[in-house]
Image (cartoon, rainbow, N blue to C red; front, side, top):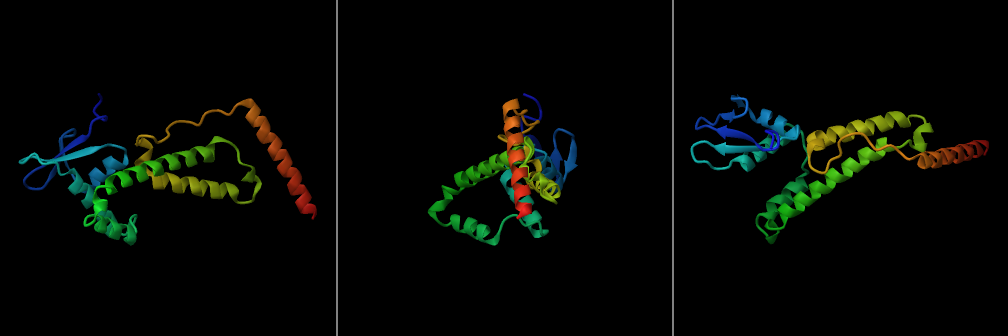
Amino acid sequence: MSDTDKPLLIKRYASRRLYNTETSDYVTLEDIAGFIRKGREVQIIDLKTGDDLTRQYLLQIVAEHESKGQNVLPVNVLTDLVRSYTTGMQTVMPQFLASSFEMLRESQSKMMENLSAFPNPMVSVPGFEALRKQQEAFLKSMMGGMAAWPGASSGPAPEEPADKNEDIAEIRRQLAELQAKLSKL
């Protein structure tokens, strides 16, 4: 097992300073957020008690980002989270959130594959290429470090078989004919 396969161990000292055990230096919450965005799991332990403080610090990172105007969680979602602590939803919520994020990762991965896997007949529409690049940039920024998450796609898209390329060429030819007929109208 390599070092990046196991969680990065961060120790919290009595002074509340956070110590990266791999690099032997002190880190900030923003440093920890950066490790996570790059796909690294972290574990934060209180040096004196041995308590696992990971959840507490992750919540603090989320709260700081939200307070800086980097709003990801809508108010109604936050309200529902607070309500879930006082209802029977408390037992269902963790599985629901985990499943929802897994579905999001999978759909983002598929969207990225679809954007780059094969040529699109819409390419001939003026401004389409700029729009496609904007969408791709948006998805990449939205995904952040998700590419390193389990289930996320990494690597080039597989090559299309020759007969599929011929089908696409035929569709393009038919589309060109339709466009010519429409322009005559």
